[in-house]
Amino acid sequence: MALIWPIGCQECYYDPDGARVRSGQRSADGFQGNNILLSRDAQGHVFDRRILDASSGALKVHDVLGPFGLTEQTYYERGKVTSSRTIRYDPFGYISETASFAGSGQQTEHSHSTYTEEGVLTEDSAWGRNGQLKWQQLIDPEKHTESFNTFDDAGMLKLAWTRTDDKMASFWERSDEGNQYGDCRETTRTRTEREKPIASPTEIASGR
Image (cartoon, rainbow, N blue to C red):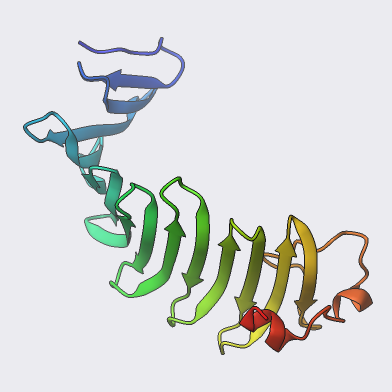
């Protein structure tokens, strides 16, 4: 059994369980797209997925799946790994950790997240290629507080703010920084005002 979109638009084929096994588009040269090979466990759950070029048969993407979803993903080009990533989950099924790697195997990014059992985010952090913390967001749902800090490659603070009950309590950013990730200041504040922290950077970074 297979489902197919009409000729002239993208074509997608599915297996009897509803999983996509082919996708692409027809052209004057024939079908251009991917074949998708699935491996299932005894319960019928997909645990391995390989995406192959429909024309050459070359492996393009290899996915490994667990009970909560994708756990490993590797991209290939001309038979060589170009990049990959891993994903870990907490006992409740929320993503707790991700790591990205270059084709050489060198780690390029790493993130860590913490959720409550109800799925409320309480911590979100990211590290760069050199292992230096790039940014961190901390949320206390009981106190209705939130803080956000970003750092440069040397570990120096670039931006810091705190909010309470969705209202900005403090904001600071380095004078040599333009718009950057996490910059959620009020649009009415001028550059001069932004350079004057409501609290000192040390107090902001320490959460005092």
